[in-house]
Image 1 (cartoon, one colour):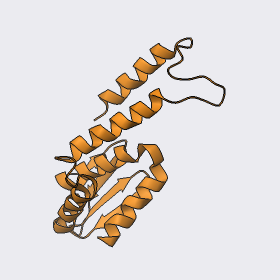
Image 2 (image 1 turned 180 degrees about the vertical axis):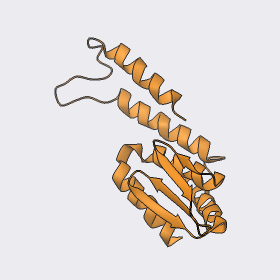
Image 3 (image 1 turned 45 degrees about the vertical axis):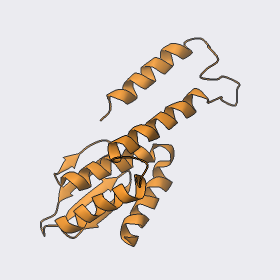
Length: 135
């Protein structure tokens, strides 16, 4: 468990506000157990039967499928607890909070995502549309 928590903490430190995306993608890797090369994470089966998952710049090496499954279960316990039925719902809530923060954002120059500045609404719709299309 310490190994898992240390890896997850590094992802949070490195990915900052986007950590939820890397965490969810890594969870899908751990739960699925299939090789994958994606934007948020990648994973591969090792020759010795182990499994390697990379999220952001952080890599964890797991000894076997039992440890991979233990990581997936640990992530569900850590992030979902009793608040979310599963990791997908956790990720969706994290994303909603991220989008809400963007809506409330105001730059140091006074421009705000909600100020109605030139092109702000078009920019916002494009950004949200791109984020929704991502798995």
